[in-house]
Length: 484
Image 1: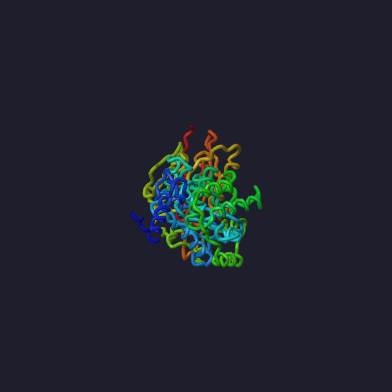
Image 2 (image 1 turned 90 degrees about the horizontal axis):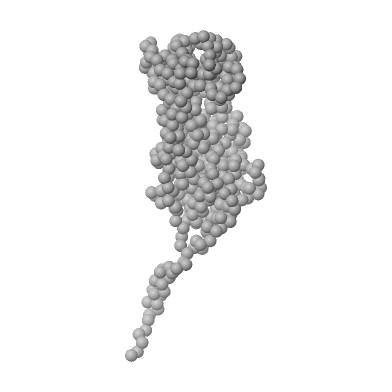
């Protein structure tokens, strides 16, 4: 019997099928891992992230989305985001801060910021893509949301969504591992978090066509150049150990591919970065104290449209909307009792049993109290009432940039308790014509016979303080403190 001949077409098809059969030991493309569960759902994480974003726009300059550098970074970010499965991705945002120092940070829910200094420090597009992929991985793995217990997050969300006490703005974000101030944003990740972000970031880079090793190269180059005294970026992203070797080992079994080269768009963005007015961390911190950046960001069109009530300011409120009733009711917190208008509301911070806020509903903005009264206790103070008062003042100024004492501290009496009184001035959460209204605060500290120190802050815009003063004085006269 004569053997049958096999056509070239059939032979080619046979060989193709054999190659597709993927024998044992064949390389396969990496897959993104399951990020696991976090105490907060997606909506809650995005809520915390937006609160943090509002503080960034208050305390730091940000380039508008229309700026060519921002548009390039957003284009690069979208290329990376495209490889993440739709059911596991986040509403990533990419923004650029005109700051000289090298830094980048990701906030819960997707917002990512990168400094001009980072763009200038990257040697090629792959290194910059590595920075973005690493930050995106922190969001993907929900590292910030996994840092705290459920009970702590409950208190944090209550502070953001409801009564915004001094501890509930920057203080609440600090409890979430987000420190905003001193001209920078600091995120505290563990070495385990960093190892995971390297792992996930390498996969994102590979799937997007970039050499994952460029991510490790950028980190290692910074460490060699700056050492332990390097940029904040290295402090926030501690080396999990042999970062470059770990990435090399991870990518070794992956199929070889032709990686993307650096682009002319990167070169142009890097060149444009040199012509942008960039600020130092010290300059940014000083500007935050003066309330400069919220106004500058708004004028430049950098403020996102949905940030109208998240930027430390909200639209103006009339005195008629917050007018206190003549009928008073009484409330108490941890041994302190006080009377207040019955048409105002009370709220507290779930993480601070000593805190109490009393305010009209319209007088509370998302990032602060425009009208109302804040009450708290001073714990672990060794020294006199004057020393405790100075500590309270320092804490208020730290949590509320631009707020300063506007007069001398005087001695007064509050129902037989020795007390101190001082007035403060600063920017109000209320805005008129895009400008923050001046605010007047009245701080009173007092000490009961048991040595416990409490403080009360009466808050109102400068223009309305005199109208509210009789109410505030009546509230102060009503204060009673039980000795525990």
